[in-house]
Length: 230
Image 1 (cartoon, one colour):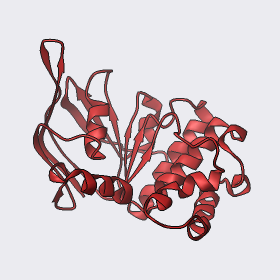
Image 2: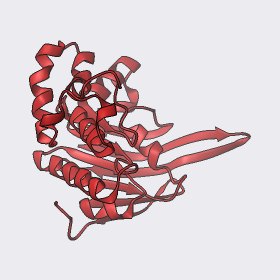
Image 3: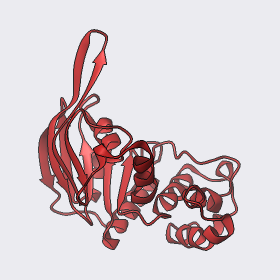
């Protein structure tokens, strides 16, 4: 579904040119839960930004279903992010004045769908993540785990084939984090692909595949033998 070929991303730090990604090549398959791990500065976040068209590579190719996303203009990249990618962030990024279901519906509003028309699907997704009884609650009335579940539901509202998760369990206790990881794993059963950046080695057990980055290069690419499903 997603293919990278010799991708390079460089940044200037003072007088020094730093290669955050150094000729990275990989394929992300449909229906696969992939984790990206590695020490700080290894290029994990840079890779996630490139996969989500939040940044462009300096060299190399990133093709999504045959389309070169690095060549899209800004409007086309924005449409790609809205319609093809669901984002789950460590700090939830919920709008504090909106209810849970309204937060879930936000991408639909950005796509031109009215709030009333988007509501049934938003409520359905909150049921899916176990928050059907919290639909009217604002973020301040929810726990950290509940807010992350709202964020997962929001990531699914456009039915995107690709979910990108940036440290989704970073602010959660171990039990709540495990439930979020199991939920992300369940999403892949529908054919969606999930790519997760994490420092949590315990999270790796919930994935199908683990890619280790070091100094901007792929150090290892392994399949998980006994994935945890729940």
